Length: 232
Image (cartoon, rainbow, N blue to C red; front, side):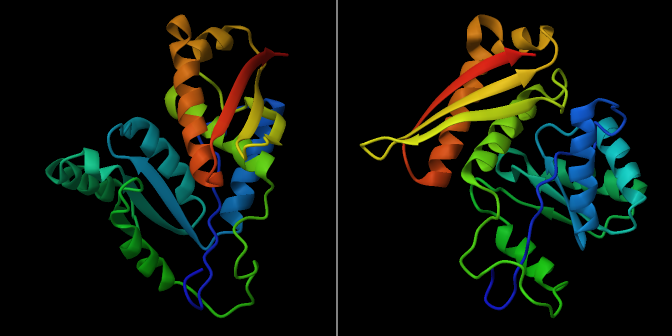
């Protein structure tokens, strides 16, 4: 909420699984299109360090069918030279009719204010959906489950399908105010376990550490995160 303006952001799972026929992917499709249908503007977030143009163009082609304003947001500009970004923007803009481009660094809070100011221009008079001090209508277990799933797919989106499930079995506040969290990574093919574990367990360790850090930032507490991979 910015003064008298309320902005609601839907974090959708992405659209690269749209051709999947699996049940869980079908559920994700519903979440994706529901989020898009409910939105006035589509913000497409891109990692500036790892742009896959073939993948990006495929998604933008699909999103063109929606007939809504698309704003491309290039994140992690603190890690990429601005001279390299301009040709990228020009290349994308030649192929697609993008409403606007923004370059940001979420980590260093660069460009966020400009993006929010721009989005505010599209606001309209309406009754607020959430109360002034309300952050989310999702419970803590849902938030941390999505956070872990996002972290896994950030590093393994080429190897692991989007239809993996996360089950949070324990969310407990300890006597010292730390939070103990146990989560199951549920997969439907045995081969994915080896991929998630990584060489000598390095990948699962990285996923756990990054997820644990993000959770700690959200809850402002020390988090003790325990992960288990379950093959159904």
